[in-house]
Image (cartoon, rainbow, N blue to C red; front, side, top):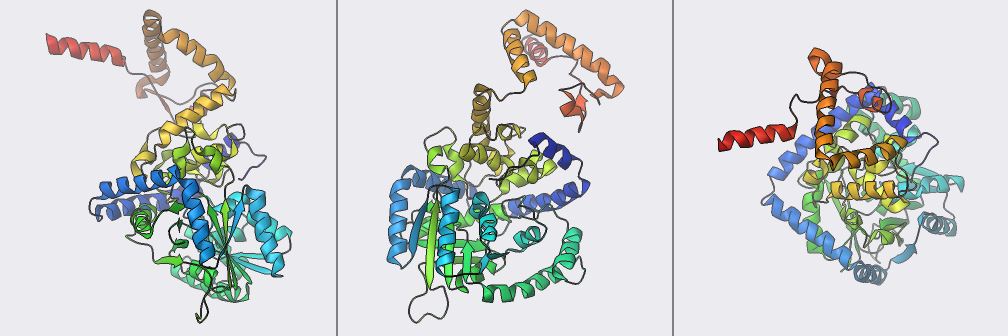
Length: 472
């Protein structure tokens, strides 16, 4: 997990004033939202398929110990080696041990959120290995020393103009803003990296328990080269990323691509079972599968266990108004957006990440677009309660909530306060009924948006008038 000396509120403030970031996010999230809607419309009985996908995830996690054992047995039966990593340090140590055993100097990596979670690149570089990211988005942000800001589009915060300047400065490519030309240039530069690397590291979208198969989905072909060209393939996989059978995998792939990039199916769907067999021309000599816990087993059975249903499509990020305004880096974690606001405190503890459950408007757009219908708003509320119980609420909330609780159980005083508050906000808002400045801590709202004046009539009064008008 990523941390820094910069506070959450400082990161948010910086993001809110970054015009280039807003332009990049607007372009990308708007396009993905439209494509997702069109792709789901093309899926027959889409709601039933989503319900089926949810049941698969719920069933798998309810018997996770059984399916993990079955999966490990099948991987080893196919000639692979399974490693169990209880935490991030263990995962990185396992990968380094394999690299040292092979006297490797160069590593080529496909996209892997788990490797970001464990900060694998940092440890590999510290050990003297050369590490090259082969995913185009990951390669772009690696060149400028940044972290991904989106689950499926790591460089979503960069405009094509900025990407062109980065590739020109770092790789010496001709300066261009044409995506096809930039992609071709990076592809040519990466070809030799694939051939020179002794170790290939990938993530895993799904592991199939019944056969020990690794499913990797991608659109660039870099994942296929990463897993087959080097003589050793190391696959990093969170322990929750299982499906029982290949039929179950088929269901998950139908909703993953549509929710992620708006495609009916991703361009490359790689199914890998074991290392290269005798007589086969392609594939690694060794396959190592590292099953990473890193807090996941602690989440099972808790109020937020449902977050482990996540299939990393990124749809909730594209729909979230908070993410679309501040991007992924403001969260300070590998996993941004609504899913990260729950998953990061779940894995790392709310004491370490007390702000993230509050980084949401609770509009429930994330729940509506989630392909497996994860109830993120419910879990955010549960974590907010936990942060309050542990004393992480700001002083004004600690003071204000008891006053509010005392007031709402006294109807006469409450209605009086509502009327006074309404009058005050209308006076401050003037003719526009919009307040542009409020003192701290309310300035946190008006720094980036106007505060609307309260309605002339409270909701309870409108309902009474409606009732009386109906019965009269």
